Amino acid sequence: MRKFLVILDDSRECLNAMRYAAMRAAKTGGSVTILSVIPPEEFNHWLGVGTLMREEARERIEAHYEVFAKWMRDRQSVDPELVIREGESVAQIMAQIKDDPEIGVLVLGAGDDGGPGPLVSHLSKGAGGLPIPLTIVPGGLSKDELEAIT
Image (cartoon, rainbow, N blue to C red; front, top):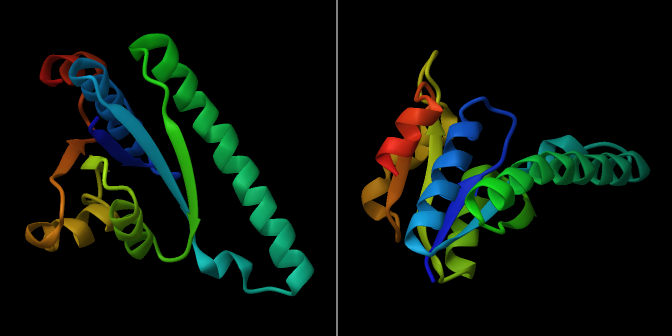
């Protein structure tokens, strides 16, 4: 089964990437892995504070994930998997792709204002060296437009 890897972060463009991944998975018999990366700089504090911040970050991610997961289950009949990693985003995305050989497509959302976003910029520059295809979903697409292209 082919998995679509989509990144959960605080960006607006994340929404269209989630929708696209779920719609494609539903129509192709695939599944969705949602990856969220906690940056290391969030924990450069005293040990106890860093541990508490890490726990709070995980709780925020899980709550955010549940919103997307509910929509995917209810609307697309796709039951996504959540993976939380810590470290630098690009390195963790590449590590997840390496660690899970079923991942067949990386789906990223591009911003519709102010440029495509740092992940899209970084990963698209080296897209020829990626081990899987990269799909970039424009942030300005409507739900109907997403439905039409999936």
